[in-house]
Length: 102
Image (cartoon, rainbow, N blue to C red):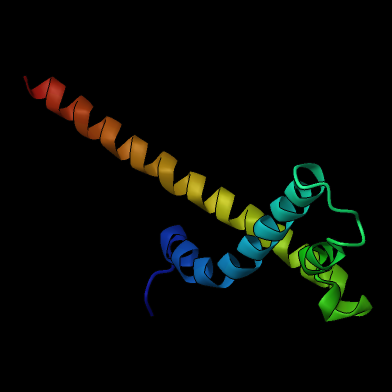
């Protein structure tokens, strides 16, 4: 069995998390800009908020969608930062070794 690393888990989950997160960001920003910049009323842009909050899943799954979306975002942030920090550490060790050889 292949060793599951943070990088592998991050890479596997990224495509699954991407669409809901992108949808949430796009509809949230569009909603705010439509109201503030273009002067549209709340009723005119309600469809954007309905998509943003996952209302199309119905009352019972709307909260689940929001929860999974939030957990997905946290997962991608934490694993992404872990990968970045590990990369920086590896680079720092390589620089330190190279400097000690000189």
